[in-house]
Image: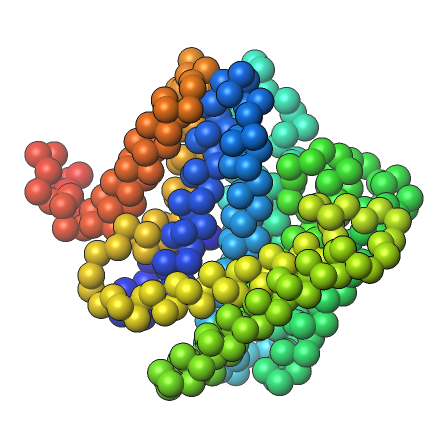
Length: 363
């Protein structure tokens, strides 16, 4: 997720578009989950709707890693001691982790006296992004050459994927206190986003970020790179499906939660979707309006606000009480509200002075 908005000319359109798609897909899942009545949840349509949500969390992690691979050149060019390099490398991850726990605190306070204190330590997607960026920053700080980074990142992704079933079934890990254990697996409660296997998407994205940065100044090479991503993504998806149905599985293997095959399938899906966004955005001009890119530029804010809205006390009277048509209307209204919010924040410097506020508020 991203909370900073550099000048639009400095941004790659397809990355904003891909992040905006992840935001839209996230809202799609959360609104229906929050408002659909228990009776409507018994249908196959709801099961399929929820299954489609498997794209969202990997997308945010993949794009977070990609952003590090793209932007780390600035730190590489700094002639600074290792300690400062380490701080610059991990600072963003620490910020996201802090925001994640502030978000948990806000949710806890919002629902007092019905809050569950265990939720304060829940390891959710923002927590995972924060920890993952810290781990990725450590790797980038220690390994200075991009050629070695490619190998280290690829090896890290493969090892995390392969060892995830073992970590989930490990007696040692499962003997840890729950607030530590939920960093590593979902034995505490399904629906969390533990490091195993979700960290796998971050180094995978970082590899694509390094390659994109390398070829960014050559449009032809960039086009060839993304054609290659489509081919590689398809191979990963087909190979993952083949392995899932033909290779014997180890103890603790759960296909849709911790299996290496499912991780590789979803990495392949991320690569194909990102390439599709790249080719789609070749049709756009940087200055053209796109609500998808707009939400992508403000994904962290949209995440926080829409969660507080659809799962918060303000809408508690509607939660788990709507039928499908009503829930879909709620979805459309929520998306429209988030677009309006993102547009207002991005254009506040221009529209703020025109509002009928006292001058000290319009600066």
